[in-house]
Length: 316
Image (cartoon, rainbow, N blue to C red):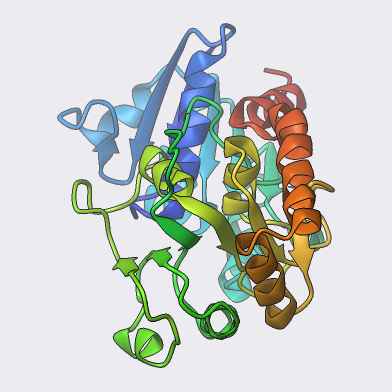
């Protein structure tokens, strides 16, 4: 069986998701060959012209983050007899997803997957497929962690509010915040008096690769994960943290694995983090148990497991 993975063009978190899918598919012993492509050409073979797509002898195509990809590639140029559309940014920008679904998605794909359970009913043939993590990424183990608290993600008003509240309750803690669009004014009104590292993009690649994200997490004593709204299911960062065995706390998502520590308010999150960093034994045990249980269930949340599920659905 030959498989094509259609990537998004934008090197952001969704690009890492596509990369995780591609790596898992290439590892599958039942896959004869796999090729990665985007609207500009072949990911692995940048000199190959895109018009070769239609002549590819491909049995299965997995399209990641379908809105922009589908619009640029168009269904007629996507090869494969069985096609799966994996939506990785649901339930955001719902008007465009609904428009694409009603006008072009129906009948084009054998299955449409959404990463948020609240969006399943929006799509014909819609199925819930949670986010995942790349099991081949192994973060470095640091005896001394340079940061107290870490966060990876693009800013928005809700995340600024949550992180600002946590920072106010955890005065003097060192932070590592990574992701685009964080404004200096946010840091001007926070309360940390010690080291703060803020990076919009990776100095080496222009975006943060899975390996770089894992390394940043490993340098933090505890990590905060705050979601955009609305939504019911955890984002890719939640599964990264489970798979990498990183102590973490997040806002509440109904579909989160039972191992995840969640809080209803930023005030409760800040209090829990402070207690953890101050060495409260009960709180430390809570996070130890969270990490251990998460690692036990981590194999269920890999890209390999997600690909196996899609392959079964497509009877490939």
